[in-house]
Length: 371
Image (cartoon, rainbow, N blue to C red; front, side, top):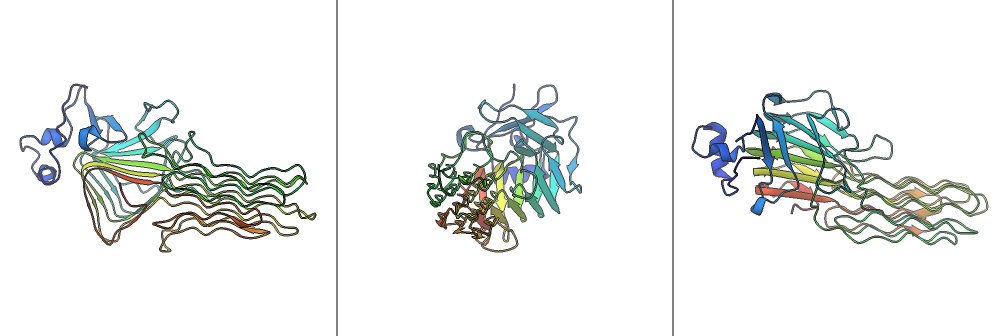
């Protein structure tokens, strides 16, 4: 692109550049050496580490993004849409401004991961919600095409098994055996992401041979990647947790269907010379709870979903019908398998990744821990 970046110019020097932009070398820290008005930011980690480099036209970005609309749709609200190097993954949506300030609540939806870019400072004191939920629109880039958990078995003559919870940053929980149908098997955990992607979907509950369909799987959490030329400041909350699996349906013959497995957490990423996660900040990419299996007369219930307002922000498995869904993973607590008859497994954790220097206050709540 015709520019040069010295990745060792970080931290204190970046802070000086925020108030003394004419200081020699600040053009490197801000990464604003441009070609035809295009500035490229990101990959501030060692050896150009990072998930994505975002290039934007500085003449067209607004001076401030402080949205009051309450939503960013990655299928409609992008400054730029860019393909990723991995053709298996979807293109990303870039939303950019000179400075980005989120002081209220923003929900991120759409099929593409969100890359939020500030040429200077990106600050979140409100809430950025890129979580998936079984009763709302899919989160940004939720559910990568490169992973899927095991579905519950559909038997020839019996009740379906529970679907497995999705594995991603940690293992999901296995689905429980139904009335003749085996539970879904869990996949192995994924390596640290090398590109922008959402979490993994759980496995669907197995149908009953008598006809009732199994519970739908929970979607994986969304993908949000925050890039700043100077500094990222987080004192608010970011949620990229997975959705719950739904409950199985009932059957009077005792051959109910399996509960769906919970989706895994997605990806929360930071890429700046300095990222500060302050006291009281909450960042979660937790797994969704598994749905319970269907009984003779009662339907299974959906699992729970991570709640930013209820520490420690875990998601319980569904209870009702014939089985119990597994809890989703949170913090150091692993996802649980479905239990009794045809419960879906809980979803595993996602990832929180930080490139560049970081300061994380001990009272900040991160699930999982940042890598």
